Amino acid sequence: MSHRPFPGRRSVLRGSLAASAALSLPTALGAAPAFARSGRPKARWGVQAGDVTCDSGLVWVRSDRPARMIVETSATESFRNPRRWHGPLLGPGTDFTGTTPLRGLPSGEQIHYRVLLADPDDPRRTGEPVTGSFRTASAKRRDGVRFVWSGDLAGQGWGINPDLGGYRIYEAMGALDPDFFLCSGDNIYADGPLTETVALPGGRTWRNVTTQEKAKVAETLAEFRGNFRYNLLDENLRAFNARVPSIIQWDDHEVTNNWYPGEILGDTRYTEKNVDVLASRARQAFSEYFPISTLRRPGGRVHRVQHHGPLLDVFVLDMRTYRNANSTDDQPTDPQGILGREQLEWLKRELSRSRAVWKVIASDMPIGLVVPDTGDGKPNIEAVAQGDPGRPLGRELQIAELLRFIKHRRITGTVWLTADVHYTSAQHYQPSKAAFTDFEPFWEFVSGPLNAGAFPANTLDGTFGPDRVFLKAPTTANVSPADGYQFFGEVDIDGGSGELTVHLREQDGTVLFTQVLQPGRVGQ
Image: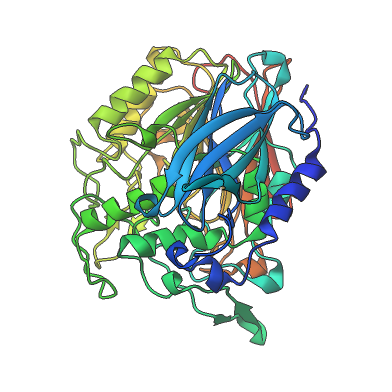
């Protein structure tokens, strides 16, 4: 594969870590910026870039007090003759976060950037610049594409453990020099409080960094914001954000476990029972803490297409906002389904328009794995498959419609990536083994968690004929990250042959499974 080296990687990393060196104790980091009244503005939570294309990208920062965001870009780390971008005024309305769009960037080039925070009353007074870097997507096929994906961070009571070095998986992902990171959801666990210690098997003890906002389930806007801020206490994540741009989607734990619109919670931990109220607050915090292009627009949304040159389009789905209520999922008709009619039609339309060699469908939930929702004591279904191996029912009807569309429109190079279930696996879906047969074979790859409890494998539903080709999962529930079972995946698209190679990896980067796919085939 032809892939450009990462220029100045060590110095870029040194710069991001140096900018983070001003971090004080976690409790100070979580303090309200309004109480910081002296000195110059500081970007203690690092920087991050997102939704990078061939000629654009978004840069994010958070200040510790009111400030004007300024971004400077350069082709070199010396920042000779930088280009300056004037960003927004950061204030309490966005929790002192802000995003600046960069447009007209050169294709396939390393973009060095630095963020300065200026005193709004005296623009000459700026804080210490915080640096980052990313590659724009190449308009030349020969350059190839490499990215990593995973999901599920700080779940099931397992937060930042200083004894283990924090979120070490980000160091392993960064070492692969990816063009971007696709996070498949559950960026936080707003419904998962953390305690200072957790007992482990064998008399061991897990230690968590804790903050006030992580002491209970998130209900207020401030508590949701604090959950997103919590993860940025980890230096591995901050260093990774400074050199690898992201494509972010959400799932349930950004709000609460297994949520759907219109739900009224029976969970006694919550004083606010209306999920729509919680979701509105969570969505605001989510939009504040990640650089996502479509959330900046009126009526902003999570689902979108990210074009990454001639080799790759990433179709980011939102299986939360438009879904119907969780149920036994066995109804013979289901026009709303898990995507909603409007999003399904959008996806079909964008897939048919795509001219990319590969079309990654970034799904926040798996297709053929049975994911139950027993929170209210009923045998409801949380994802798509319900365990009936016969004809499509319930939410499966939307997936059948989509798969049929891909076949009859002869859309090539579709690959499904997901996380959610807290183990890693590869499923090949084949009509010859399925109850529903009007589709072409395709692959679904599962990875994660990043730092959360690991769980045994879910059962397969035979409606779309999945064959589990690879699996690594524990045999007991909620295995801590101290005992392994933390995973991420890597996708490498060769610029010459167009082959797409998937590696499923453990948290230290060890390859567990490899699958090579050939371009130009309907489905895949």
